[in-house]
Length: 431
Image 1 (tube, rainbow, N blue to C red):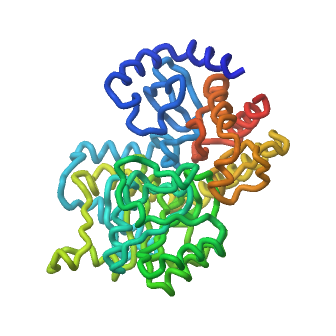
Image 2: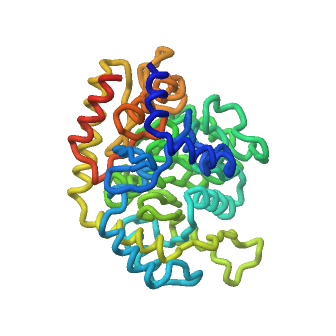
């Protein structure tokens, strides 16, 4: 069956095959992000609009990858596109302070209570890298705790315990791994036990309120509250990585709905409106450690930004996107309901053979094996049938014109409809 899908895929993506052969000669593994490669080769996109991707062979795909989950309004929404076009007429890179940054920050600060001070970068990796550096500067401690299966980008400070088995090093060339410890998601007793062992030198804990790359698994509210309580008592910083979840389920972050009080929050994806962005924001007294004015080197946390940080193009698309979402209760109601519907119907279509995890407009299908009966952490997700998930996603790409990045979670945008979800469920039943 899989061979039939591969044959069909090759037949309908001949131009992509030819172009990707060129890409292999020029780029490592033919891609510029590891997860974008899948066998036999990824199709090459020439355009996108709304819910759709169009490849160079003119195949049309209903997209659930949605730009690494960043395109909550869909591809190239008219209001965002128009604002970007106007900005490009004025210039797209200044390398100086610009008003667009102030406008975007005003929206974020009003929507995210902890964002008393903000620093922009151009990727989520940079935002989390600086967040843990700041935690070490503020506390004078070295150890950072993260979640088994937690993904915070490629920064060496957090590149540990990402992929199963979590005990193996993720990469050569990474040093000081003993300064990163990992804890099991949604297991407060074991997590606190590990944190206590490192309490004297624990600078902070960084957690996603919904484990994205680790399986699209929501955190239990009591778990997050328990970790936060430990951090407060231990004078360690509580850092929430809301790069995936920020502005995804509601206008603002997820943490206020769980009555949490983080010290630092990282944002990205949606707040850039489809352009490159990363955001580190937090309480004023903590963020001020990165203020270099009048400080000795030993007193500051040297947090940069980069050449393209706060560029007017990203600030403009971010502002335009958040302006739509600010008055978008109907958008959130729609996409969250579609997510609930997708999880319910997919679970029914596979008749107990899968668990569909997620929250709101995010969802992921796990094919059960190894006697797994629940999925509340990345270890359980890793023990599911990962190959079946890849085959399932590839079947939909090759046969149904539906695109999930194989093995990854799906994101629903405002451009999707209930009919799209029904089509996806029907394709799932046939798998």
